[in-house]
Image (cartoon, rainbow, N blue to C red):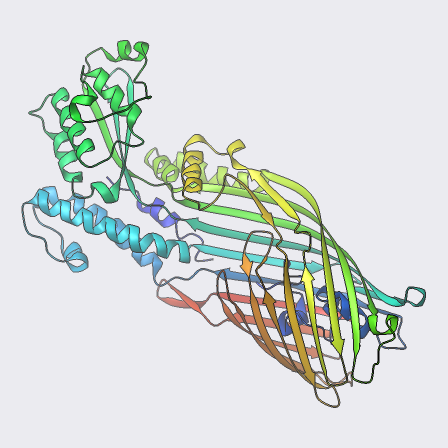
Length: 569
């Protein structure tokens, strides 16, 4: 009564192997280090607050562009502390508890993990089952959900973008932006372990399955096994004993059809055992005639779960047109203490989404049928991920304000005012029945949906910066108000602070460093660093401060790198 080691290991497949630009895309280059703020050092600031367009062009300039301004990517893994060893321990637990019947005592492995239990072999087995199940459902499933996460993505900027150009008649600066972005998330969706006992008649009908909550029946699992293995009892007596246990332990819900089939097959009345299945019919008369060959009752018991691995990917083509103007000029404001900018941006997203789901139960069952079936499971999952796609187009609207003076600035940007939404493929059109049933079970528990969609949520970002009198040195920060989402449904509420040296001479290298933390979702903290050479070439990297342990090694949970060429301010 166990899942295979291979199936359990599937839950950790995502282990061995973000920041945002307009809060939904991978942060480009220089901006990945300084955060979502307006900064003269990079033309990519126009990807954040559209009100910054005006300050990114000198008063005597009419055009600024990126040459090949960004190529970069990131990778993120889940929170894990020797999760691979925990999975191996669970598999060994299940094998050792099964062996108690033959050894009449627990293995040293079980004793070390759960202590010593007194009683007969059957009583010990019951107590170890209960301890194993409690550990798996309260600890391991939660660990798998935290650790079984894997994200990666990359972005490539279209040559010559972002492009800024001033039109005097429009009294402002326009921006054009175009990029390609790929975001991928693979995550484990946990579920409690259960037990399925299948009933059939030799040479006759399939009478159905009993699907039982393993936590509830842990203490009686050996009793059920003993009943089924007892050669001195008739099949009818075995069914009567099972009906008594099902009723006593409150395991009727969800099993009504199978209970009716068993009762009809052996001429029993469920109400005699305190079981009510009103509104649920038993097997059809044709099925019962087929089953009446008085063949032997055949049972097969296995552990079941709805748990699985949910993989999704979004390939995004992003096109944006922005406009920024000096509002203080329009309103004839006093500019002795600073000036006010306003800007807006229209984002066009062309999005192709892909999704697949791998059921651990389906994987376990296929592995029992041989390596060829097992291979088919992986191949089909890969094909689903690339072939089952949904195409969508959406428009997002942003609005920004920026107040700036000689030595400081402050602003706010409102993103996704209209909250564009994009659909993922409906997996009911693609999955096999076993995997679909598992996914529907996870949907019932509120962990996912069979037909998923993602909305880019409305939120705001506050920004601020102070400068030295020469404006070569700067300290800047940003903070997200509300929760931002990307195209695979990850959530962000980012706090970021950075400092940098921005020389005016082309030959002097520019330096910058920063710290950021996501206050929701993965809650990762990162350190960032960047270098600018010849005023043109930006090199930036980041690494997570948290780590995960796997196969005895500690690995940072996050890393990113980017490079780009753009015109110097």
